[in-house]
Image 1 (cartoon, rainbow, N blue to C red):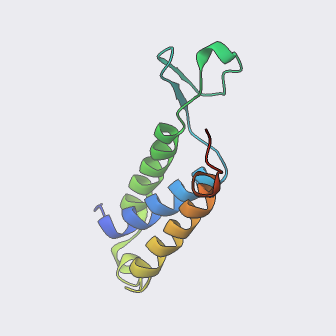
Image 2: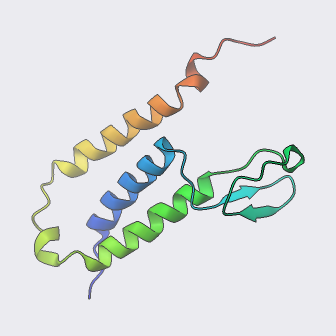
Length: 108
């Protein structure tokens, strides 16, 4: 069994992007009260949740599993173009999901 950084980086990026697009964190962290939760805590006194940790967890778990399970012969067949195109696609997805930060009218 070997670990493939190439497969890890591809799967990590894809799973993180999908989890972010679907708003599907593995778990949530509520920094205001210092709580971790597998579900959304409805009580407003808990403050907003941080989903980033949950998305990173999904991506890391999937990336490690894929990097260990995918055989070297398949890893070697991944075209180099994928490593140039996929980050650009992920970047565009990130800009799309966060477009409200760029398009929000100024307050004040």
